[in-house]
Length: 400
Length: 215
Image (cartoon, rainbow over all chains, first blue to last red; front, side, top):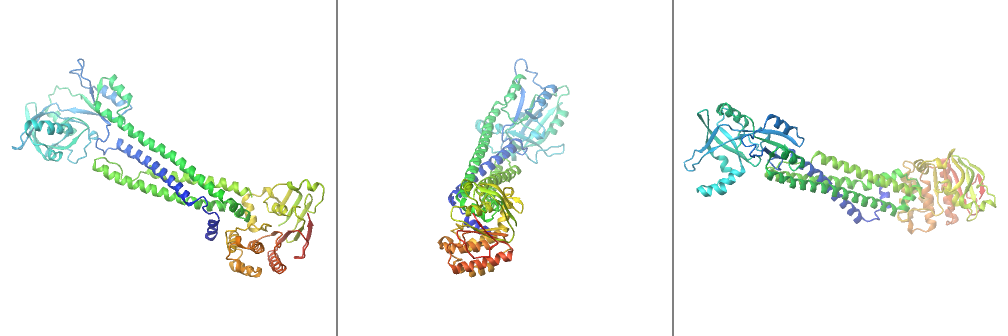
C-alpha cells in the first residue's frame, strides 16, 4: 500500500504549489488560534465574573442602602420584606445583610512611638461576600486577636492626608498588617478589651469589617437591648451592575449604591464585546481559510485531472483515491490544530501566572471547552475536506 | 465472464449504420469465456468506440451490453473498479501510459492496484520476453511508440483478467517483437483461461481466433 501511495504521490503532485499550500495552512492556523483564544477568553472571563477566588476583580458586588432624604432620615433600616424583595430580583445572584455594630468601639495603639486613638464602628457580612482569602479571617471567644478588614480608601486617607497633617509616618499595607493594636468595645457600661490586627485591605465594602460571628457575639453582649436590630445596608452580587433593569429597580425602590462601581460595567461590557468580536473574526477567518483550503484541494485535483482519470480507468477506485487524498490533506490540519491548542495552553499558563501575581485567579490550563472546540474544528475541517475531495473526485472520475 | 451485446449502436455511428450492416453493431452478439475474438475494420468504423464501450469508458450508445448478465450502466463505480482490477484488462490504441513515470512504475502501479497477483520477478521475466528490460528504468515519455506499446502490453498482463481487450496493439512493432508479444499474451490468456478481443485494421494470423467480426 505504501508503494502504491508513493506512486500516487508522484502522480498527484502538488502542482498547485507548496507555497500556496503553506499559505492556506497559515491562514487556517491563524483562524484556529483566534477561535480557540476567543473560547478560552470567554471561559476566563466567566471565571473572573463568577469565581469566588478573585479579589474584587470586577465590580460585581454592590452595597445597597436607602437614600437618605427628609422622609427616610432615621428610618433607613431595611425590613425583612424589603430584603426578600431584593433577593427575588433575577439580576441579584445573592444578597447578604451588612450587620452594623451597635456598641461603642475604639482602637488604640500599643506603641509609644506611634500613638493613636480613635472611636470606630464595625460592620460584618457573611463570609462569601468577603474578598480576602486569609486564614486569619476567623474569630471565636478564645482567639488571641480580632481580625479586621480595612477599606483601601482608609489607608489612602491616612497615608496621603492624615499622616501629613499629624506628622506621622506613612504606612505600607504590609506594615499595617503587622501592627497589633488595642480594641476596646463597650456597651451596657462594661468595657471589654482585646487585641486587634488588620488582616486585609479591600475595595469591596467601604467599612471596617469584622467576622460575622464576632459581630453576633458582640451585639449580643454589648448592644442595648431595645436597639434596632434591622440592617440598613445589604451587599449584593450581580453579574452586571450596569444592567438598566437593576438601575431602574434601585431608583423605584429608593435605594442607592456606589455609582462609581457601576462605571466598571461599561468597561466590562467593552471587554465582552472585544471577546465576542474576536470570536466572530475567528469564525469569519475560519470560513475564509476553509474556503481557501477547499479551493486548494480543488485546484490540486483539477491540475491532476488527467492522472486521476487515467488512474480510475486503470482500476483505481474513487474510494482508494479519496483515502489517499484525505491522507494527503488532512494530517497537516491535525498538526496545526494541535499546535494552536498548545500555543493557547502556553499563553494561558503565562497569563494565569501573571494574573495570579495581581490576585486575579484564572485556570493555568486551557479549559475543557477550548479542547472541545479544537476537536470540533478538526471534525469540521475533516468533513469539509472529505466533501470537497469526494465531490471533485467524483466529477473527475465520471468524466473519462 | 460472458459478454452480450444486444442491438448496440453508438450515437456517433448512428447515421452511418443506417446504410450498412455490421457483425457487431445493431445486432445480437455473445462473446463466451475464453474465446479469441478478432474485430477487423478500417479506420473510423468504431473499433476504439467498441473497446471503450465494453470497458465502460464510453456510455453514449443505445442497446444493451451485459457482463455476466449484468447491464453495464447498473454496475456501480466501485464494482467497475473491481472489474478493471480483476476481470477486464486493456491495451489502448493511444496506450495511456503516465509519461512522467518510469516504465517500471507504470507497470508496478497496475500491479499494486491488483495486489497479490503478479510478482516483481514475473514482471522482470515478462519484460525480458518482450525485450524491454533495458527500458524499465526509463521514463515512458522518452520511449518510442513501439517501446511504449510493449510497456502497455506488459502492464495489461500483470493483473488477473477474464477478458483482455487490445486496440491495434502491434501497430508499431516489427514481426519479431510481434511474435514475442503474441507468445506472451497467448500463454497468459491460456493460463488465466481468459478471452481476448483484438481490434485491428487488417486480417492476421497472430492468434487462432474463435471468431472474426467485421464492424
